[in-house]
Image 1 (tube, rainbow, N blue to C red):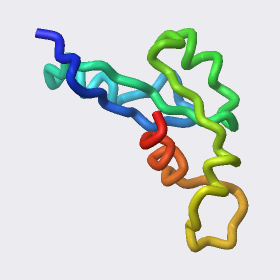
Image 2 (cartoon, rainbow, N blue to C red):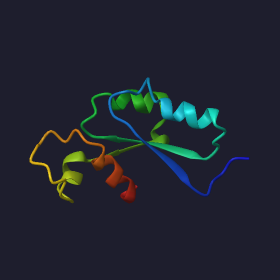
Image 3 (cartoon, helix red, strand yellow):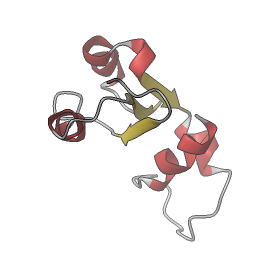
Image 4 (cartoon, rainbow, N blue to C red):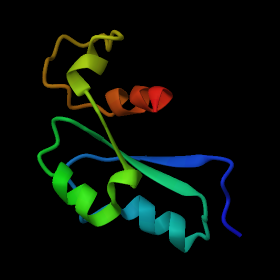
Length: 91
């Protein structure tokens, strides 16, 4: 039976051909919806859309999201999962 009462977000970047979490969910019998969450700094975005469909991939603005909370880090490279995780609240 396909579930439609919740969604599993898979946070990913730069590995469209290696989304192991999606396969693990399917192998475990998960039948609900999955959404792959990518950021607009991911150069492999087109491949995600090609493999999983635009309806299953949501892109967020990473720089904009980085201005919405304090990571307590002086770095500026934004290589942290926290931006995608926080974007899920909006998605």
